[in-house]
Length: 92
Image (cartoon, rainbow, N blue to C red):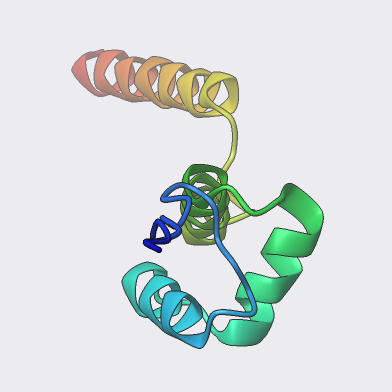
């Protein structure tokens, strides 16, 4: 009697399968503890896990003390006005 081989679900992560966990941790460059925490919070979909890791990395790469674009634009405008005022005072 032939029994069909059970095919694994390709888009779900099984934390009990050590080979899957090792492959995913190496591919995403996270630790097993970080992976378990993400799976507990997000779920076991490999796509959602990779999106979450990418999101965490992009949040970590942006410094918190960067001012918003409006502040940068207003400072640039102020510097331009100050430079023009200095230039006109030097010519008079």
